[in-house]
Length: 128
Image (cartoon, rainbow, N blue to C red; front, side, top):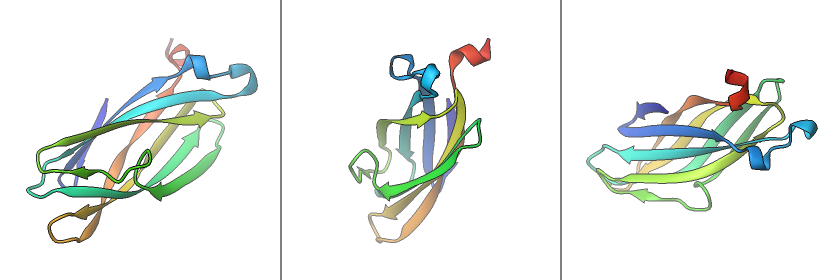
């Protein structure tokens, strides 16, 4: 698991290879990731947008940007956690992602960025 604190929010990421949804013969590799956001601030925060940078080992690179995560813009009260699971389809069996969340302080309505740490997605057989 990878963790980082950014602007008072702890971001933890766990990745999982999804062999049942992958097909190496057609260069389709599916990974899922679980993100936990823990608000260590004294105020509630809302996740407004995300921006991902995605790379795979054959140098295919792309960006994904949009509102919220998995269709919601969660509010995370002070001292609370929010967790979600999403996925990424790569054209190779190794890759990495990182990005940022655009957040809002629910008390004063000021927006700020938090950095999502770089995490790797590697098919388990590559580690043997």
